Amino acid sequence: MGLGIGAAALTSAAAAAASPATLEVNISGLRNMKGNVLICVTANPRFFPDCSKDTKSFRITRPARDSAQVSFRGIAQGTYAIAVIHDENGNDKMDMAVFIPKEGFGFSRNPAIVTGPPKFKAAAFAIDAVVVSQQIKMKYML
Image (cartoon, rainbow, N blue to C red):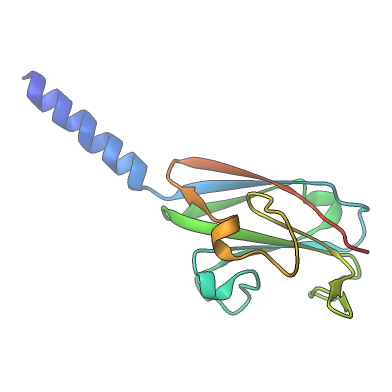
């Protein structure tokens, strides 16, 4: 009898762990509330940081004033990375000035930025629970 209860509990725990998760993204450090914030979540290193061509990515565009916390539901377990752009002029892209971003950006795990965007591995994190949270601090070069 005890074995049956233990097996049922183990099966329930495994089913809960394998169920789709919610990813909560908390964004801080926007320099103003102009424009939109573009958020992209991908599990494919080939499509990071620009995952616009990744058909399996999760993307949201929010007005900057409503972007402090964004939730993605129904994400399968795995390894993901997040890229965020503060699109201040609302043209749906990162504006550049001679290879230097004119608008803000951020990545999951807040990796150091030296030259160019980080590699997928530097921003990657695991979704291995029902709710996973990432805190992203925006950076501005100009």
